[in-house]
Structure formats: structure tokens, C-alpha cells
Length: 345
Ligand code: KG4
Ligand code: ZN
View: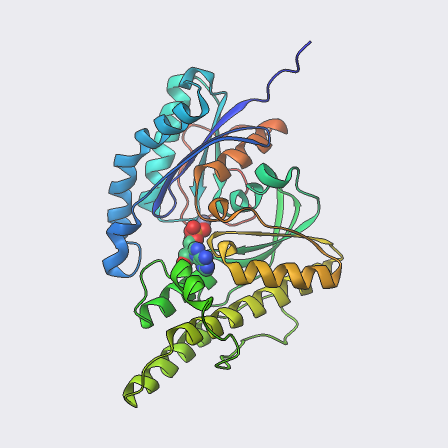
């Protein structure tokens, strides 16, 4: 007798500038197709919402078709549709939500409108199996930097702390701009930092010693900009690699220190890191070092699953289906400010 296959879940992601379509069965990743409009935003130094929405519209169906072809399945094989309902850019979210509703209605399959942030955590199940419960999650992306207590990734996610100003990814993007590096700033800064000295410049580490689990990156971003401006005003060259490495060290230092603090304060010995900044090589290395020293088990998905994609949405959808969660209504809307506590809408 063969074991029945877990339901096939199609995940759709359009919260920012990546159009993602992923296919997942249980914890198994079958396809992850991502089309990015990043090149269209590069000259503006940030994502232009209207440009992103239009790009999603054009990329949506081809992305789904590519995912189906990669997985060797057809739409008729899909058992459920999951889609990012928020948080994110309203117009961009609407494209994905509308497409997901259309697929659900046409196929007569249930729709799960899910939280983008919870999906960034759930994606780790595709790589490392079932998430331990409870777990502390450090979620670091272009729009968010939070510490969460995930008692149950399908339903009980509580915020412990968050940035009071800029997100970590936002700081990367702004610092890259100051240094004349391309958008998005994370990958080029990560690259430059490899050839620099992380101790070259002592950039500030805000909220480092306070008892909260909040972050602040706006002062760091300004400190880097001032330092670079002063150098230029003095007619000196800017040591880009050293600035990148020193900035990156400040970010990784604060994020990992607070993540370990969150684990200790809540008596939790599992840490999951997710979101685009989790692709950062220094953050991954320092987190591994500090977790090992503190006796905390660390899980970080591979870099390609950290940045926005459809597989993460399918992963969370598959978890909800496995737990018999009640599907969303077909009149569900997009919510640009969906709180992290709403895993399923
Ligand atoms: O999760 P994500 O793809 O989109 C949002 O939900 O925001 O995160 C995008 C952010 C950008 O700010 C980008 O600069 C940052 O993730 N990022 C990185 C790296 N790769 C992407 N930051 C640091 N190091 C990286 N290697
Ligand atoms: Zn994201």
C-alpha cells in the first residue's frame, strides 16, 4: 500500500517587487518560480509601488505556469491556493490576491490568505522539517525587523519587539545608496564587506544594552552617511569595503545579541531567522557562533528562500491545510498593515 500524497499547495506572493509562485506538498518543495521587477526600480533607489503592481500583473500567470512545469503537474492537480494577504504594498498585494481568488474559484479549491511575515518563518520547514514549538523568530526584511515568539506557526505568533524606526533591510538599502552601490543594497554590501575590516569604524549600536527587544537602525544609517560625507568633504577617498564591513558588523551584532536575549528571556532554545536580510553572510555566521555559545539551536533557510518567494507562502499554506484550518472567504481583501498575529485571514 502506498501512502497518500500530502495535498499540493500553490503559493502566490506579490507583496513587494517579487512575483513568486511556489508549489509545496507537506514539507516538500516542488517548485519555486520568482520573477523580480527590481531592475525597474533600481534607478529610483527604492520600490515604486505602481511599477511593481504592473510588473506583477504581467509576471503572475507565467510565474504560475513555470512553477507547474517545473513540478511536472497541472492546475488540476492543485489541492489548495495560498496567497500573501499582507503586509506589503496594497496595489502589489491586490494583484496576487485577485489572481489567487481566480485560481481558487476556477479550480473549486480552498483559498488561504496568509501573513507574509509568518510565511518567512514557515519556509524553513521546507529545508529543516517541522518547526520546533515554541521557537523565537528573528524576522529581518526590507520592511520589518522583529523578534517573535512563535508558539504555533499556524496560529499563535506574538511580537516581542520590533524596530522603532528603519528596518534592517531598509538601512542596508540606504547605506548602499550613500556608498554608490546598487539597489537593493543587501547583496552588494555583503559582497563589499568581505574585503573590509569590520572593526575599522566604530558605528553606533542603538538599544544594545537596554532590556527591550526593540531595535533602531535610523541612527546607524545617519552615522554612516555623516562619516562618508565628512570624508568626501575633506577630499579623502571613501574606503567602501571598510564602511560596508563596519556597518554590517553593527547590524549583525545588534540583531544576534537581541535574538539570544529573546531566547533567554522566554526560556526558548530554538531560534529561526527569516526575511531577506537573513541571507546576509555575516548575520548567519555570527548567529551560528552566538547560538552555539548560548546552547540555542539555530535554523536559517538557504539564502534563496530568505528573500521573497512563492514557496514560503505555499509552505505556510501547506501547514494550515495539514492542520485543517478553515479556508479564507473569497471576498477576503489585501491588508497592507496586516499584524503579525494574524497568520491566516
Ligand atoms: O524579505 P525581502 O525579500 O522583502 C521584504 O519583505 O522586504 O527583503 C528584502 C531586503 C532588502 O532590503 C535587501 O537589501 C535585503 O533584504 N537583503 C539583504 C541581503 N539580501 C537581501 N540584506 C543583507 N544581506 C544580504 N545578503
Ligand atoms: Zn519579505
